[in-house]
Length: 63
Image (tube, rainbow, N blue to C red):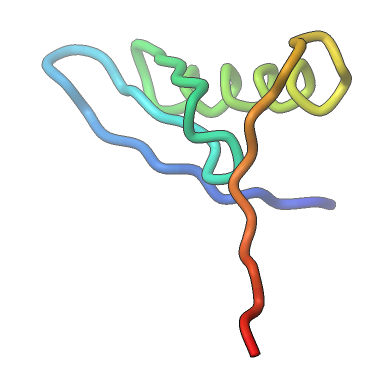
């Protein structure tokens, strides 16, 4: 099973979040479980080529 980190918070009645690797793509849910399901769907779309020009976050190793 693969895991991916995400950032989330509650704003009034909604849970909001984004995948750590793709911080430009925010999603939401009425419950934390719904948010997690939406994040899974978002990952599939982003990694499957459904969304063009996807921006990512990476680490660069310096000497």
